[in-house]
Length: 337
Image (cartoon, rainbow, N blue to C red; front, side, top):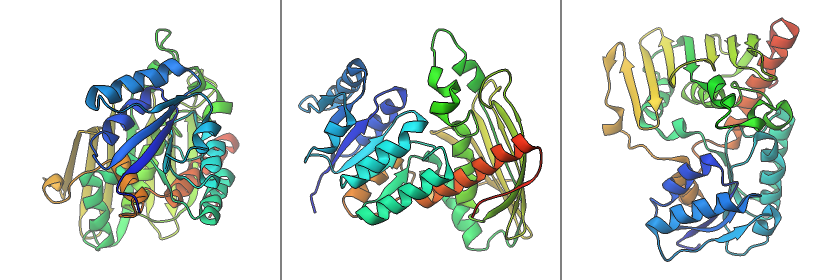
């Protein structure tokens, strides 16, 4: 086993900056290739790398298939529009690379299942870049639920709001593909909302059984606001609201058990708060936070499993797909299991 993880980034748009930033924290990894159809975006990330590590010079490529042929690539981060996650991640797994894919893992349940089977056949690892899976407050809450500290879970709520509509309609910063159903697979629910669904399903890993959802596109071809009620096979209910017409990023998750309840409040990756029965808990002093990219390095080097694995990506796809079907048909819908 090598003592350095060699990683390529496929897709060098805005989200790639955070991935580069987190990978540069680790001395046991190298970014060996940057790939984007627009070479200037790859050059921007090259400049970001060389500002911290002047001696490094990753290859600049425009065709992801050339990345997958390289012997100096152990793992690939797929940072592309949603509809490209499945074909590119599948090709990378088949080429023998470990894969970290941005959210959502895929735009359909069938694609998610196909990636899981491809990873199994290839003997490679597949994970999703869900930051909350590595933040102290969420890890503490997940353990509290698993250890029975809340007792039997009775009810859950999850809420996200952000200025998503304003962002995708801003003429100064066009985000055309995010409002194209063919490329995005949906709107705010499968974009930022994917983080919220994944966080709830990871903190409280129960099985969504039935969902009733209402969606408002606010004049766009894709959803902006979604409200849903979910019944879980284990008994609890959840009320989930995903709002794309907010004025700041705000997310909260509440888990209510018959012994105790907890609440996580999220504003940024660097700013979260946790309360148990209304009292603040300093989760960071108990469980150190990490990032998906740092976890990816450890996965490649054989030191860890993915903290947000492909099964979680499948579960998010199942719930999202059922919510969209429910909104279209105006009725409760069973979640594929």
